[in-house]
Structures are given as C-alpha cells and as structure tokens.
Image (cartoon, rainbow, N blue to C red; front, side, top):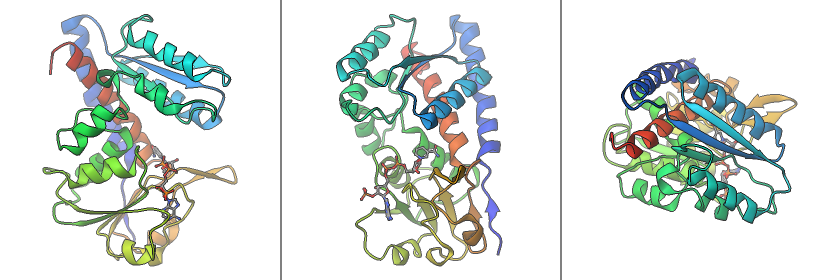
Length: 291
Ligand code: NDP
C-alpha cells in the first residue's frame, strides 16, 4: 500500500480564497480590513520564519498584519505593557494579537499571554478560550489543532466512533486537538487517547489508531511498525535535522503502511497559518457585531 498524500498546501489555498472574499466583504461594508498584530521577541530563526509566513499569508488575503519586533532582552513587564498598549488599540485597531512563541527563558510567557484579551486571542491560548473549547462551544481554537481537524474534514476522513491516538499533550496542539475530536459534531465524536513521554508501550497504543496524530517534536518517532495498516497519519512535528525539515513520522517507511499521510513540509504547517487568518477574520467580525 502507498498512502494517499494529505496536501496541506492545496487545502490552505482553498481556505485562503474564501477568507479573501470575507475580507473584501468587510472592506466594502465596514470600510476596513481585519488587523493582526504579531509580537516577535528576539532573533530565533525559526520564529522569524514562522512570522514571515504568517505576514505573507495575511498579505495574500488582504488582512493587515503588523509585526512588532522586540529585543531578546525585553522583560516580562515590558512585554506585558506592550501587549496591553496594543490591546488598547494604541497602534491602530488590533482585532487579533499574537505573541510568537517561544519567548526567551527569562520571560514569564504565561503572564505575557494572559495580557492578550480573550476577544483578540487569535492563537486560542487564553484560559477563557481553552474553557469554551473544553465545554464544546469553541470560539478561538488553537490554530494547529483546528488545522488538523480541517485536514481530516477536507479529506472526508470519518472521525465519529473512530479511535484517534495523539502523541503529545501540549496546551497548543495535543490537548486542544483531543477536545476538538472528542466534541460532538462533524470532525468530532471520536474516541481519543493522548500519549506523552511517560506513556508505556507507545507502539501498542499507536497501533490501535484509525487516526494517528504525531505532535511530539521528536524526529521520525513514529515508524511503520507503530501504524495500523490503512490508518490516517497526521504529522504535526517540525524538526530541523542536518539543515532539513522533518516531521515526527518516518515518512518513507510509514507511507507503505498508512492509508493517508500528511507530509512535512506541506502538511499541517500551511493549515496552521490559514486557521490563524480565519481566527483573525472571526475576531474582527465578532468585534464589529457581525457574528
Ligand atoms: P511540546 O514540546 O510542548 O510537547 C511535546 C509533547 O510530546 C509532550 O507532551 C511530550 O510529553 C510528548 N513527547 C515527547 N517525546 C515523546 C516520546 N518519545 N513519546 C511520547 N510522547 C513524547 O511540543 P508542541 O506541542 O509545541 O509541538 C510538537 C511538535 O509540533 C513540534 O515538533 C513543533 O515544532 C510542532 N509544531 C508544528 C506546528 C505546525 O504548524 N505544523 C505548530 C506547532 C508545533 P511530555 O508532556 O511528557 O513531555
């Protein structure tokens, strides 16, 4: 068997086209486009490249994006003050505010994230948005988790009643994704298991998955022997190995066993960015009372 490819770039292109139309409608009806402000602290090359992709995608759909660079030496208090001033619209309307992670080690990241008001929290990290998701009434869903669900929906992968195994329990990927896939409705109703570094006999658990999501940040952790034949395998991982980007899945090996597989790059990454744009438009529409 050779798994079919889940082409995140193609799905993201279609999502961007529909977002572009929504942005144009806002421009016509309310006279302005959604605005996203991104805070980028320090000079982490990966963060800079993610922010560049987000700004480029915003430009493609007509969302106004501003990147606010801050030195790596910025203190927690300075970053909280910056986010607070952005939220007060002191740099112009800020429908969405995003603080690119990771922040330097001396910064209290939670304090900075908590300064983002829940109605501008397009990353979906605020406790209020996490709570809404856990109650099955999502507002801003963390972009990567939303992107994975969108990928499954787009490929008509049935989730209802299926066994999903997610490797990784972070607040930004594993946990919100587990909630999304467990909640009732399209793209949900799955039976979800979350694994982490303390899970014992990981291969025995992953082999039970109809849908296996790897979000561990460990290059090629998931091998062919860990995959049930015909399963759908979604690779969230982004790892730099010898100057190349690789996922958490041994793509070449697993492709021979799985039914569908997402590549790295070109899988979940573009969908994460598309979901950020969707959240930004949603934030603007909620703010303008249009939803
Ligand atoms: P974290 O480091 O926050 O979480 C990783 C999780 O994987 C943890 O729960 C950890 O367990 C678990 N884990 C690590 N090693 C193993 C192992 N050997 N067996 C089982 N579980 C393991 O990472 P993130 O959630 O932030 O990101 C995960 C990956 O996804 C990274 O590669 C990241 O770059 C990528 N990513 C990709 C995005 C995209 O757009 N495609 C967006 C965001 C992230 P424990 O909790 O016990 O430590």
